[in-house]
Length: 103
Image (cartoon, rainbow, N blue to C red; front, side, top):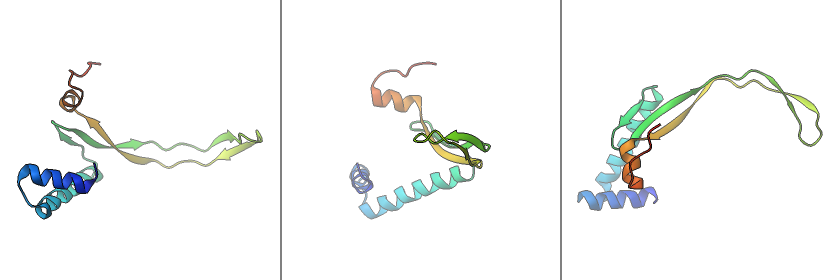
């Protein structure tokens, strides 16, 4: 489902017009981005958790060219972060129709 279809379906479900629903969806997405960008996790119990995972820096290392076998130095990678979404237990159960497995 594309965003336009989602907005239309949500507007129909809420009995709202499409324009107001689009404003709501855009604000909702912007709030998620703003919260996670600050470094805060956003937990929505019915859906899941949005978070920013920190990826540590990697030092310069030795690698090989797979075609020639020649040893080359690979550059260091700076520390970074990547966005993640972890679905909640309730979301998994609703989606799969079965209780989620315990670890």
